[in-house]
Amino acid sequence: MAENTLTPARDTGRRQALALATLLFGSGVLHFARPEPFDSLVPRILPGRARDYTYASGVAELGIAAALAIPQTRGIGGRLAAWLFLAVFPANIQFTVDTLSSEKAPRLYKVGSILRLPLQIPLITQALAVSRRARRS
Image 1 (cartoon, rainbow, N blue to C red):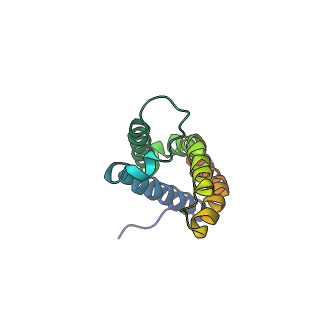
Image 2: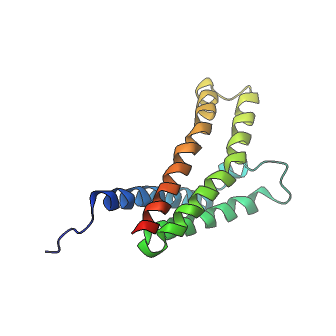
């Protein structure tokens, strides 16, 4: 039986990377399986079709998930994940604006849309932490 050679810090970094990879993989698959909800998040100010942005972000999420899952590409994967979380922030703002301005949206959705915005911060910090750990190992 092989001995576990991961130090606690490396094991934590691996777990963080795989958690982010799982999150991004699931979201990436959803961009293709159920693109409609994502289309509505694309800021209307962007040129072109919303579906093109939905598919492009789905491809990006799947690619970054793969990079995070592979130890040799984990460092760049962490940096790319941080950039992706920053890049999709305008879509989260659009979602909040649309939800708050909708008379049909339930109050829980409105509160959730507001609370969702600051969640980008831990996602970005975790992605950068994964990148830093990968560079040190």
